[in-house]
Length: 95
Image (cartoon, rainbow, N blue to C red; front, top):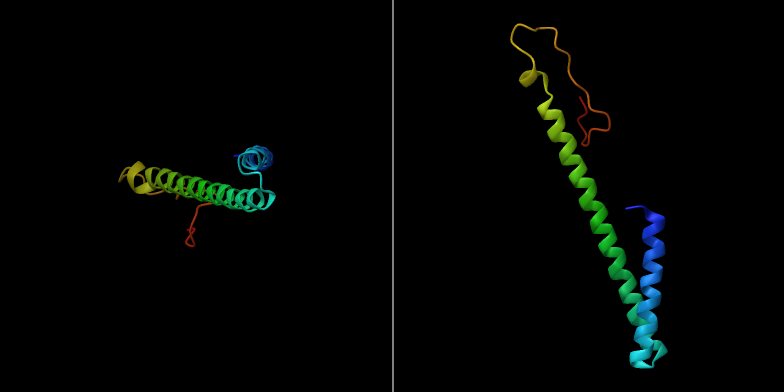
């Protein structure tokens, strides 16, 4: 989701929505408030989509770090195994 593209698309969708609403209702006030409600709903949907993508990326990174942990990848003979550190690991405990 590239933000400028989303905003341009949102403005285009709102313009089409406003034109159609005005043609159907013939009222500028009704068109204005319905378009405003539509804009808020679009922004809420965009925000939820970004939150979902961030959470998914965090889960994927956590799963990758757990799969590459030294306990599961190193044998018992290898005592010099180093901890694999994942950059930008989500959470407060980045050990």
